Image 1 (cartoon, rainbow, N blue to C red):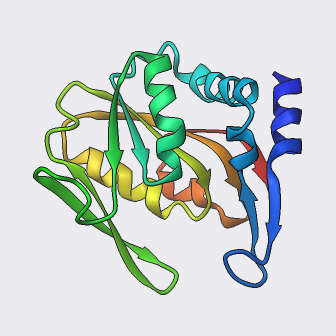
Image 2 (image 1 turned 45 degrees about the vertical axis):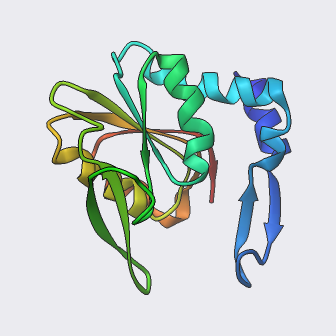
Amino acid sequence: MTRALDDLKRTIRDVRNFPKPGIVFRDITPVLLDPGLFAATISLMSEPYRDERISRVVSIESRGFLFGAPIALELGAGLVPIRKPGKLPAAAQRVEYALEYGTDALEMHHDAVGAGDRVLVVDDVLATGGTAAAAAHLIAGTGGTLVGYTFLIELDALKGREKLHSKRVEALLHYT
């Protein structure tokens, strides 16, 4: 496991001043280009939840989809995409959440998670926690049980974990 984590950290590319000055963007594209490392990443992100009887993996647009789909397959669970408004074709529930300057919203098909479902939320990065907390809010209204979250990267200095209300949070890599 340690070797795979070291390989991940070496492979993720830092892009300075993207998307705006002063930001260091953690680019996961090189991980996706390496089939062995990508497979190891999916396995490591899935591992903490293998015995949790996960029935739905909720993945957050857009890079969450890249990890959510293979994790759902690995855990034998259904995949639920959470999208930005107006992107889902059937009836959806919506939640708005605060950004640093303004608000945004996410939507999920109203019938995607039901009573008795055990849900894992997947995304690539945990930063401020706003989108992950919004996903939890969508799940809360369904009768399903949010088991936890799994992320490839957690940006510790942004304290996003604090918005996730003591649910289990797993992240493979931590950046300060």
